[in-house]
Amino acid sequence: MNQPSDSVNAKALLCKNLLELGDEFYDPAQPARFPESQLRYWNEPLVHALGWSKEFSFDAEKRLRFQEFKPFASSLPAPLALRYHGHQFTHYNPDLGDGRGFTYAQVLWNGKLWDFGTKGSGTTPYSRRGDGRLTLKGAYRESLATELLDAMGVNTSRTWSFFETGEKLTRGDEPSPTRSAVLTRFSHSHVRIGTFQRLAYFKNEKAIETLLRYSARHLITELDPNESLDLLAVQFLKNVSHRLAHLTAQWMMAGFVHGVLNTDNLNITGESFDYGPYRFLPNYDPDFTAAYFDHQGLYAYGRQPHMVMWALQRLGESLQIAAPGLATEETLADFGEVFSDSIQHMFMHKLNLRSKGQTDDVGLLRTFFHFMETHPVGFERTFFDFFRRTDDHEAWRLSPQNSLYVETPEGQALTALISSFEIDSSARGSHPALTRKDPVTLLIDEIESLWKPIDQKDDWGPYNKKLEEIRSLRALTDLKTVKPR
Ligand code: AMP
Ligand code: MG
Image 1 (cartoon, helix red, strand yellow):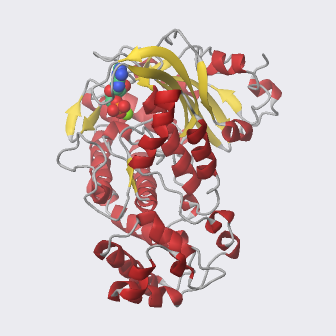
Image 2 (cartoon, protein in one colour; image 1 turned 90 degrees about the vertical axis):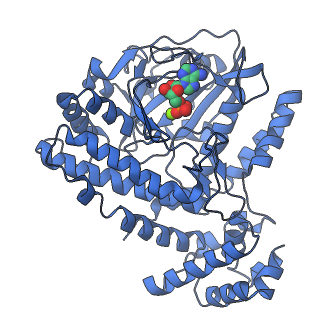
């Protein structure tokens, strides 16, 4: 097969920038050999966008690169399990690292550096007692999360593919034995806050500097990689803080609860990744917790901004090892402001309303959330009902929640206030997804019910139909493009 880089007009160009970091940052890893290979998910729109559709038109080629992980000639010579530590539920854990995955290729595409990473590709030096595997249900769930977040315009890693691999796995949180899979993740870096924490733990100033300069050169390219170390550390921390504030606002507006906001699950590029026990909100509830093992509700929906800020403080402390003059608190002081500003803009965008200025917009936001707090309404449903009013200014009357809009004081206040705002984009206002009866959601009951036919009859039809439905949402909202002031 031709190397994609040779044959696709250098659209997505294979590269191996990761090697610049050196051996301190990773260990070579071996992909596992699996007894079976059934392609269950292939992200053709993404593959097409990279200009690689032709190269991967046959299943044998897909399998070679995305199940067997044969190295690409112009990229990394061998898969690399990345080293990192992290705070898990606020407890420091120096026993982390890629335990069931690795990075095995990189590309330059769309002006950015992207990694091909894996999940479930076998054991590595960091597997501890784990089997290095991913359950099929885990792959299924991650693909749904990345599809929906991406369709809403949340800055997320993408699922490139997953294969069912024919092993029987044992898990405490799934009926076992359970089916296995290997997934390829396409993401804008795997440099985590925990990657810096590990270097700080070993007091490796030189390596922190190397990683900072690498990040400025390839990932956060607004920064000057040749800047003095002290200044670079400040600029880097501030930049990451703004990116993560923006991402957190996207999660909040998507009604998304990541579930496990450990510092090793936060990418310094501000891209969301690693979807385990996530949930989408059924209704507005700051205490809503995704992970069944998060007994304290540490990573509950409403605590996400706080916990991301907490993680950024840990990043600041780590950088201080190499840049002792770094004033972490001061550098992070505007996190809250950037977050609220993003929320406000994204809120107006998610309702397709034109801003009337900060005071009026905030007034609407408060009224909207007060209504959602005081009535049993669907989170996505309420946004959907008010978004739909382009042709019919009172389209919310079509909603099963209509009586709450028209008969309660909070609903009346909201409908009256919202009517005083103009529609922002007529193009988005006539998006085909608005002709649906109900909004597209991905609540846990549906995730479970779509899994049943796969589990019981190996019927992937309902899942594939759901993917189509999710993809039909594209361009209705794009939370990524809503920049803070
Ligand atoms: P996660 O909860 O997916 O972010 O993973 C936390 C840590 O556990 C990382 O170091 C993972 O590589 C590791 N890990 C999770 N599942 C497994 C597994 N089945 N085998 C080996 N390591 C694992
Ligand atoms: Mg993780």
